Length: 53
Image (cartoon, rainbow, N blue to C red):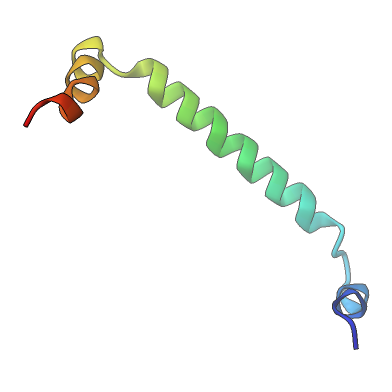
């Protein structure tokens, strides 16, 4: 039996792609907000970490 046949037997399976998309968008927006909310000093410190030895 092919995998697609298993999906056909699940009720309301079409909702899962929408839930996944909404979860991805929420996490992306949250990450973007957190990046822009960081303090400039913290960003400068993190930026220079690879150069410090």
